[in-house]
Length: 88
Ligand SMILES: [Zn+2]
Image (cartoon, helix red, strand yellow):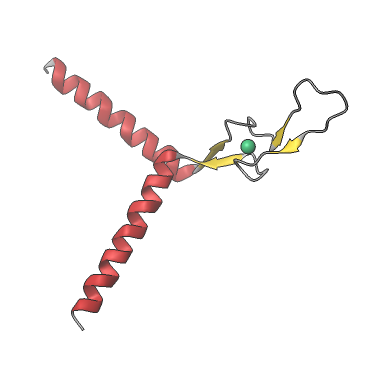
């Protein structure tokens, strides 16, 4: 097996694993609030934690792979709808 084929096999394995992770667990932790849903105040005295605006205080975000999957599914459905309407 050549080095290129080995590298290709590794990339394919990583892609399949990431696809499975996106399928099993489509949501990841929000990177802004680290999954708490709250942003801690910095510096000011007696200021309260604010809800995270990036994740709407859920603490979760849709993974990039799942977002791509949802986008392609929606685009494919729209293309199918347009094709079916053209044949009527
Ligand atoms: Zn957040």
